[in-house]
Structure formats: C-alpha cells, structure tokens
Amino acid sequence: MSNGKSRASTWFIIALVFIILAAAGAGYAFAWRTFVVWWEPLVIAVCLGSAIGSLLSRKFGRLLGTSSRPTAIAASMLTMSAVIYGVMMTLNYTLADKTTEVPIEATVISRHSEERTKYRRSGRNRMRADGHYKAYYITIRFADGTTRDIPASAGNYTRTVIGSKRHFTAYDGFLGYKIFSPDSPRDQAQP
Image (cartoon, rainbow, N blue to C red; front, side):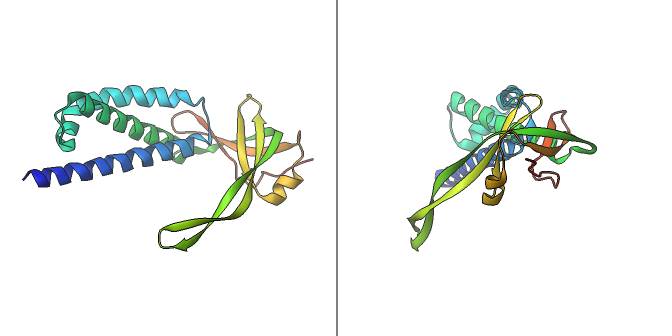
C-alpha cells in the first residue's frame, strides 16, 4: 500500500512542477506585452497565493505524502502564487477590450544582436554544436519611459535607424493594465 502512495505522491510532485513552470511561463510571456512594472502583479499574486496556499496546505501535505508542515505550506504557497500570476496576466491579455484601441508611438533608442549556438542532432538523445547564428533585437522607448526589446528580422534590423519612430496599438487590458501589440501592421520603421 505504501508503494502506491509513494507513486501517487511522485506523480503529484511532477504535476506540481509542470503547473508551476507552465503558469509562470504564461505569466512572463503575457507580462512582456503589458505596460506594468514587473513587481506589481507579482506582489499581488504572492499575497493571494500565500493566503490561499496556507488554507490548502493540509491537502497539499497529504497529496505530497509528507508530514512536514513547512514543506506543505511552501509547496502550496508557491503553486498558488504561480497559478494566480499566470491567470492574472493571461486574463489581462486575452480578455483585453479591443474597442479601446489607441495608436502609440515609440522611439528606437538602440539595436543589438546576440550570437547564439546552433545545434544539430547527432544521434539518439544527442545534440552537437553546429555553428552560430545571430538573433536581432531593437530597443524602443515609449512616451511614458518604458523600454522594450523587440525581436526583429535581419532585414528590419538593418533598415532601422536609431531615433526613428515606430507605431504600435495599445488596448486596455481586462485587469486595467494596458497592453500593446508589437506585431501590428502599423509597425513600420520610419527614417
């Protein structure tokens, strides 16, 4: 019987790690397109996650198969905080009010490229370095002072002039945080 409990708690731990990584990844991906100071939604998520996680810590302890109360509390708080952060940022972006479309302008302040290693498959579960490639980024500054690094193609990178203007579209997010669309058709470099 203990082997079945051990196996179930192992699967629960694997599921928790997957949920935490997926929720935090989704939150980060949508936070990149949001005009918000990075720590604001994070503080809200940690506060709500701590409150909800402390209430669910006994159930987490049973599912984890541990009698350690601090471990159960930490696991439940971390999981709930990550889930709340991911849900907040996802809802803010996906349920944005598209009728509040506002054109905004940004200034190109710099551009840079990063050299990365390209890999190729050399056998079962083996990868081998196979040269390098460049990833191009354009740094823009909006009127309120926030800056973003936006990925660019090689052609767009070479045509971009520092000091030129870029046009984007901004919307009101579901939770009140403004979002912008970097891949809008209005995103054309103007010398």
